[in-house]
Image (cartoon, rainbow, N blue to C red; front, side, top):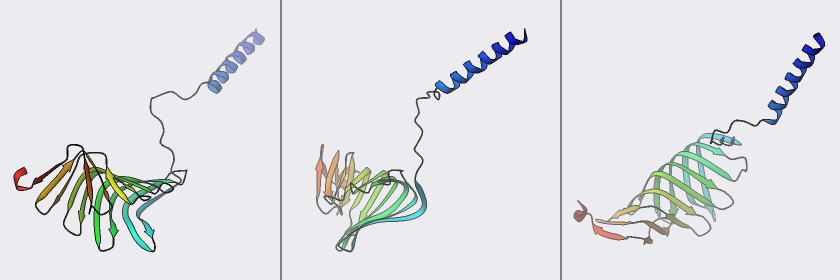
Length: 177
């Protein structure tokens, strides 16, 4: 009888081991966030072109993905610059892709140019290959008593030239109150 009991116990252990070995983790519908390769706090990011600063961002927290190409960050405070004109920006979060030279900001993006324009947008993308700034969502730019709004835009990096797209509207500030 001890042999039968031992054989039964061994079969149970073997079945349990096989179940443990071949069963995967429970599917919860969520994917685990990849572990960052490096993390930083209170960091400055910037891009130079010809020895001059194109953009500079101070971020509260930054994490570089394992691919070492993508960086995610929060609490963004920075600027874009072109000659004497500057566009300062604030955003809740962002992402940079080094090889593609893309910078993406999102979350209550607010910008101010040194010549008086004020920008409000949900997100902004800067393409360092073309030196173009854009958004794919509703935005407003206020300057000299006028408000420009549209569904999206493409512009130079300091908002001197803006191409508004989709339901574009230019109105007097006083008329919108």
